[in-house]
Image (tube, rainbow, N blue to C red; front, side):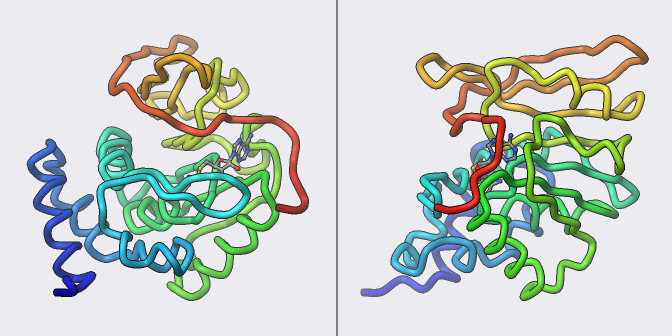
Length: 215
Ligand code: SAH
């Protein structure tokens, strides 16, 4: 029997709650955004499996639990200006855009950048501003940000990003090399100090410098 995407979505949401996603607003947004539209057509039936999936340019859309977890840990509110590094499919950006005032997102692969821009238009997410470039440098013209989320793993935390956070601002970033265990880290800016808390072990594609014009 074919289980509908809607039923699969309900099962996924129950699973996310069991795994500790307690923020009702985050759960509502995940229920609202059609993940099936952000992945290649042939994977459509797997859209609500709790798994990372391949997208263009050899990148991945994160596992729904990781998206929910990182979003919950970022503690976004409706008055926030948020920066995301690593637009990819655009899914995480869409989730954040529903929770904040304005979402800025940077991608270094042109095909992904173009695809995500189309999705934002299709879903009428007019509070998202996109940039094709190297997100390790952040977005000088738009700083400072209340929140920053990096969705690719850095071997180190880029200094330029830290200083684009507002005082009291929070950044979530996976840290670690590809051949070691990476962890999601939450950084809170406290004047010129940064409080660092190590959270969950994860596996992310690498944060790389430079830009790529083709797939
Ligand atoms: N948030 C995405 C996850 C995509 S995977 C989603 O919801 O689908 C991580 C993405 O980060 C990839 O698309 C990769 O190309 C991008 N990336 C890696 N290093 C980057 C950098 N320095 N600047 C901008 N994007 C980067």
